[in-house]
Image 1: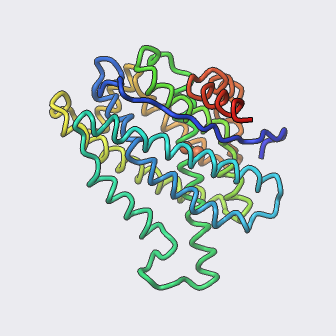
Image 2: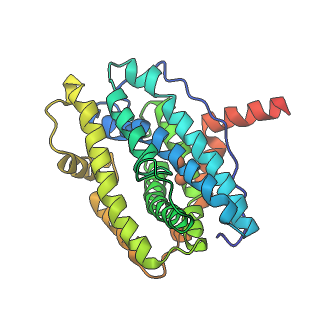
Amino acid sequence: MTEQHHRLEQRKVRFDFADTPLHWVPNEPEASHIMNTLHILLPAGEFWFCKVYNKALPLVTDERLRDDVRGFIKQEAQHARAHDSALQPYLDRHGINSKPFTRRLSWLFDKPLGELPIGDHALGRGLKHWWLLQRVGLIAAVEHFTCVLGNWIITTDKLDNADPVMIDLLRWHGAEEVEHRCVAHDLHVGLGGSMVMRWFYMVIACIALTYLFSAGSGMMMRQDPATRRSPGFLRLWSRLGKRGFLPTPGSIGRAVGRYFAPGYHPRTEGDVNVALNYLANSPAAQRAAAELQAMA
Ligand SMILES: [Fe+2]
Ligand SMILES: [Fe+2]
């Protein structure tokens, strides 16, 4: 947990994608599609975070951590809503049908990763706690990636000329990922998660995220004539990374390595002040703050 307690707040942002082009990174259709994968993964994925954390919350005895977990749930729910709001007025409008993919994802989070992973058979009390801890461990590993990617998107200048609405969505989200970077790790440790579990779930997260990003972006690129002949996912990522449109594979590999260090703690990942500075200047966050003030 952070030494000086920073209270996490939910910013009720809204985005209007009516003028956002499909290739929102100008002349970079592949980079646009790879980052668009977030819109199809995160609504189901981040609502799943919220469901798991709502189950974990009663087990947290430390008041400060409880407060962090509550703030985390509110922020992740807003992230899921914001990305979901891009599906119809943005992806559908540009002829990208993501429904078969998002249906499969909803099944993944509701069934194998849900409360009843073995059909309708309720888990015993001990097993229920064990299963909850496994999912908390997986979320902690995924949150390491969201912090690393969030830190990249708020600090790179390579996307400064991208569509202003889409880049604000990704930077607002990335900044909040840096802002709440410690919560998932602290919760995992607080509930008894071990270092071996941390390593194990990082391996699982690497495999799962590579597969999901590859499958999701591939599905969208096959529907866009501009990207039908694009190379395979890893080669494409590597090329875009070298040109600065994605974090380089090397920087991601080093971030994974840091997670394996015995003394790892996310407080050394990214800079909260940079994140808060972005949030203070984000057009969507500023509108949300003004609306809140007007209602008060
Ligand atoms: Fe998020
Ligand atoms: Fe997060």
